[in-house]
Image 1 (cartoon, rainbow, N blue to C red):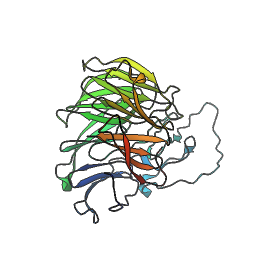
Image 2 (image 1 turned 90 degrees about the horizontal axis):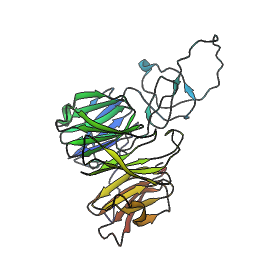
Image 3 (image 1 turned 60 degrees about the vertical axis):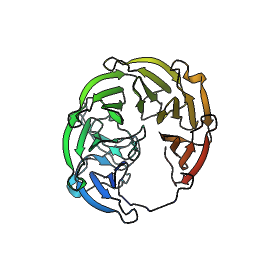
Image 4 (image 1 turned 180 degrees about the vertical axis):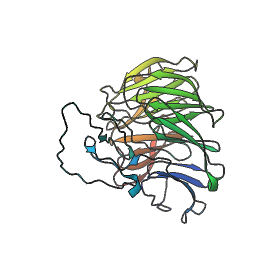
Length: 345
C-alpha cells in the first residue's frame, strides 16, 4: 500500500458507482449496469450488460435551472446547453417542468425534486455507496425511491431478482451481516437482507431533512448530517444511534461537526470526513464522549469518504486518494497519495 502504481485506466461513459466481486467489476454507465472481467487488468472485457437499470440518469447541470422534457427515443443525454426562453401561461394554470438537482443522478418531475450524488467503494464500500455487494447479489439504488437486487453469481447472465419501493429519498447503503442500513434524506432505514432477494424493513429512525451517510456495528449506528443547498439542512452533526434493540433504534447523542460527509469505523476508531475541515479520527469506545476523544486531525484538504480495513485507511479527497496506516492509533501516518485531477466534493 505504500507504493501504489497505475495499472490501467477504464473509460466507462457516465460512470459514477462501482463494486468488485472476484475478478468482475460492476459499474453503471449512464442508464445501464455493466459487468466487466478484469482478470487481465490491462485488458478489461465487458461480459454482460443490463440496459435501462437507471432509466432517469442525467449528466450534471446547473442546480436550479428548469429542464425541458427529455425525448428518450433520441438516446442518452450526455450534456446540456443553456438557453433563455420565454413562455406564456394562463393565470392559474399548472406547469409541470422538470427540475434537475446535483451531479450525475436522477431527474424528478416535480418542482422540488431532490436527488443525491453517490459514490461507492469497490468490494468493501465506503459510507457514500449506492452499490452494495451481498454475497452473490448486488443491491443498487436505481432511483432515490427504488432499490433493486441483482443476481450477479453468473456475471455473464446478470438477473434482476427483486425491486423494492421506498417512500423516501435513498442516498447510501451500508451492509452489516444480514442487515442493510439505508441512509435517506429524512432518516435511516434498517432492512433484513438475510434473504437478499427479499429485503424486509425492520425499523427506521427519523431525523431532519439532510444528506445522510451511515455506518454501523452491532450496537450503534453513526450518521452524519450536513448542511448545503441540495441537502436542505442547516445543521452539521454526527448522530450516534443505539441499535442494540434493532426494532427500536433511538438517538443516543449528537455532536456538532463542520460539514461532515463520509465516515467509517474499525474497532474503537471512528473516521469522519468533515468536508473542508479535513479528516478527523476519534476514539469511539465511549459513545457519550466521542467529541472529547479526538485521536488525530488532518485539516489540510477537503475530504469526501473513507474505507478503513485492517489498519489501512483509504480516503477520497479533493486532491486524490490517500492511504493512512492506523495500525498504531498513537502514530497514524500517511503512507501514499494517488493524485486525481478534479477531486471529489
